[in-house]
Image (tube, rainbow, N blue to C red):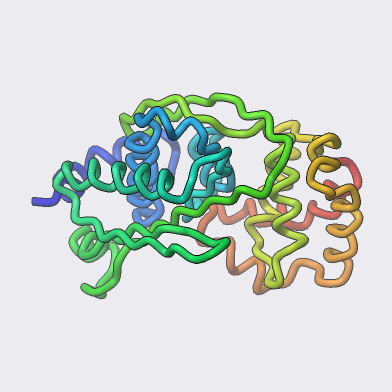
Length: 261
């Protein structure tokens, strides 16, 4: 039997301790697998040059109150070959746990990412009625940011314990605002995370802005918000990922946050 199936009740017990709604089983099992992958990854010394960023880093390291799908990293000098070796080693370690995992590398000039797919899992756990549906985790990295000040945070989730490099929240909020401004199709998670980061004390790192030639970032965000607003479609997109659907109201605070951040 797949170890995930055998241990699912224990995984749900961890989730209850974390205050997660038990009906969000899809998000819980994804979060467990994300934590497992990170633990396998950061046991490798070379992974210290991969800085864990993005929404999932906020969720797993800083207790952001929403689920997040992808794993995003800043690459501080690893070659593509080294990246592939790190990811493949982590994947092999997961497979040793008797977990069925499909792995795909997408190696394109300027854009390399990886996909972890878990066949049968959602169906076997009765999370879906479609036997062909696969749970997918995308692993992505960038190397264009400058002036990062990495710090260590403790990953302590679902029995996994590992020290993980990440960025200060004052730099992550810059990355989140940049994502909001630069995406052609607005993602509500960027808005939500900026508001949440502000509530946790994050303020823009001006030096980091300057290093990355983003000095007009807040003005651009304000202009985009004035043009687009926060649509019903935007709200509907993020609601399934929130532990408390009522927290969607935080999107309405984005304009005020931009005045003070």
